[in-house]
Length: 79
Image (tube, rainbow, N blue to C red; front, top):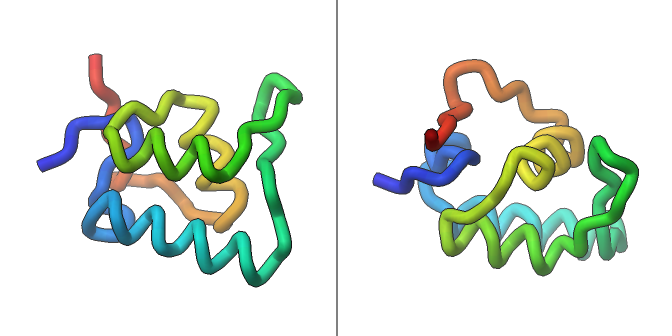
């Protein structure tokens, strides 16, 4: 079971998150995501962070915002 900040439960597996990001990148022509501190994270970096389980809070917020996902119980914090 993955233990990154962004729990794999959202799309079952980290690979599904990456696949969804790739589809959204093609559909929307987005190359990066604005995050809470007003910097941009390249989607490729977000994909890599998810795959390795190293997504931080800003990456997770960007992903949830991008897909309008409600984290609810699918949000897991690694302390």
